[in-house]
Image (cartoon, rainbow, N blue to C red; front, side):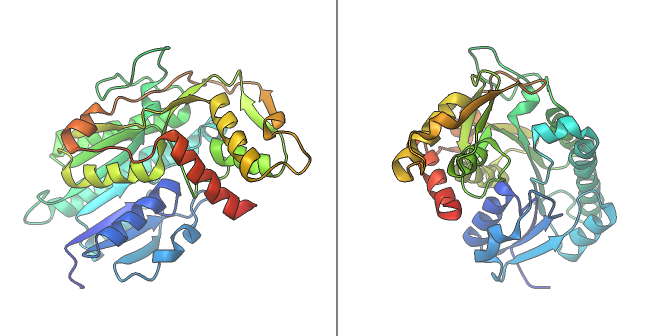
Length: 337
């Protein structure tokens, strides 16, 4: 067995956020072995990790988090002492059409990981000492806010969609394993991520790709739904901090303090594209905006209070929305244009 200081499984490591986390850990911690466990469903793409696939401290394993036996075997084989759990079904629209898949992956998959970790770590002489199970979740578990106020770590759960209900369930299971068995866990709930390599059906990539193809840009309802936007690399920085320095049993909210409604997002992207890649048929990309009927259970506003993370762990976002969105558009222009 090669001697690494730590052996960490990152689930969902071929996905949007996961691939950025894997890259950060592989490059920043050459003394850690990083095992990327991903089922490679529609949202997973190993091309996201081409630049690190040959690194000596990186291993990819194609597996399903619901496959309890495989997870158990991997924990023992690699002597895993840390799990960073990002694997999840995460698209709200898909959850409305197919809630069973979301419950299976997000709830039962998380339970399989927790139970496999419990059995392996409790079999060791040191038990949970030096181990950590870190579960990455969403601010959608809190439901919707009014015009004012912010989600805090103490905000009661009030999920609206099958997606957010499945994530709320998985959060509760992680906390239960801490309270019942003494497992060393942390949970974080983050706001909407954006940045390079995001799956094309999400809002920002969809706006960019539709605009460049001169297709209609669909906006739900009146376009006034507000989200707090977090640049993906700032989220990774927070994950790194929480994994290493977060207090066991604690939850940390991660937010960009960058509230924008959907119309403002489209407007910002179209303005950047109008300058960088003018519309072939003339006029502005904003002319492509069309309003479509709202989706069921569409929460009006989310906003995160990340004070605990900034004061206790010293986290600070590097990007504001105006800089982050330009970097994001530039990446897609290079890829799509």
